[in-house]
Image 1 (spheres, rainbow, N blue to C red):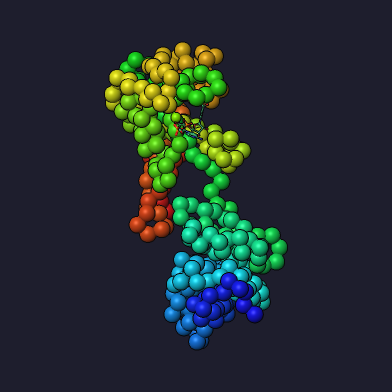
Image 2 (tube, rainbow, N blue to C red; image 1 turned 90 degrees about the horizontal axis):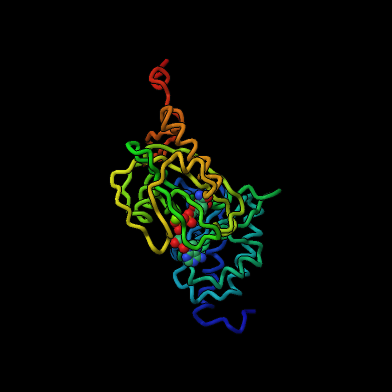
Length: 317
Ligand SMILES: NC(=O)C1=CN([C@@H]2O[C@H](COP(=O)(O)OP(=O)(O)OC[C@H]3O[C@@H](n4cnc5c(N)ncnc54)[C@H](O)[C@@H]3O)[C@@H](O)[C@H]2O)C=CC1
Ligand SMILES: [Mg+2]
């Protein structure tokens, strides 16, 4: 029997909803990854909801494809999902990815009762997963780190480096201006942007100097934090301090920064590294950047490493 909350429209949709969640045998997968085949599959197409098989033997179900999600009662969804999970297991699928638009969030609790857990949620959609195969889940985790980037902006003509003291910090220590990378932003571009936003100084990215990894970072919502310091060259010199983020900003003698105790251990270490490069040659400290075409068509990536001598760079045969 159907529940009391079941509407006339919902009743009409029950067979459809059940079919929407019916698993398709692996052999019915077409080249696009869509499950194809018999009358049930044509029902799926009709409603626009088509579970997709991925190359790892998992399935992807997108609730955004439901034509009338408001007519699908959570109880109906629960029964359909339960049946489907049983069948998907029998058919050897290894995992299910369930994509839920924020407005259909009532289905999340139902899926959680069937063993689904959040994989990630962003903006207007949540993705839940259920591992179906034997043993522990082999599904990759979502993002594990946040990335922060600072710019060590050195004026090579004066030997002075740009330093700030952040507002809202427990201790006022000198550090390089910097901040969090935005999605899709190159490391060097974050450094240029953050240096400019916090100090008004324009600068150019030259190289990577260091990477700090910190687990369970309180400012990263308990995730890990990668803090990257770049070597930068200034192209303007007049400071215009961001009052919201910074307390102080100045051009400080690099040798003084390398010696002062009024700084953090990271800044102190990198000031000494930068001083060494300034005196002995930046090739001794730089991780420079090269750009290559990616295996993903139309995309490029940036590779950072120590400079290679010409005869190693152009090796053939
Ligand atoms: N040199 C060192 O020792 C230090 C390194 N770092 C690293 O720098 C990176 C982050 O740099 P930041 O300058 O902190 O980032 P950021 O320059 O992007 O500034 C973050 C902004 O978000 C605001 N904010 C943060 N949490 C907030 C909240 N809950 N509510 C409202 N506003 C909030 C802050 O007030 C600040 O304006 C991280 O990778 C961190 O590990 C941070 C501090 C010191
Ligand atoms: Mg900052």
